[in-house]
Length: 155
Image (cartoon, rainbow, N blue to C red):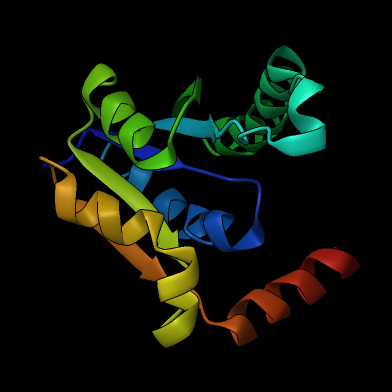
């Protein structure tokens, strides 16, 4: 059975949509959830080449974000660990899963198809193909994300 779950989050409502599902199963299965946010440095080119990205500042913001998500999970009695990594998303997610000794990766996908997938690729799809452990994927449609945004606005 799954005891350690890695949950990569990017700060979007789409990524967070899997949290309620994990809440339902984490308690009864005595799971520990490792929340992960990967900071992907943007390549600096041309005129912007002299501008240095504030990685420590981004790491601090990521830690604050994950701490808030963790507080909600802990309030429900779930054991939570936090990780912030810097690098390419797919590689860092897979490395974090190994480091956390996770036996499951849980992610959402935007459900892009066609040209959208070609242009933006899919981190979830790449993790699914390369992971050495099971990956649970929950698809979020645009309508579901919009509905959740509306609910969050009135909450």
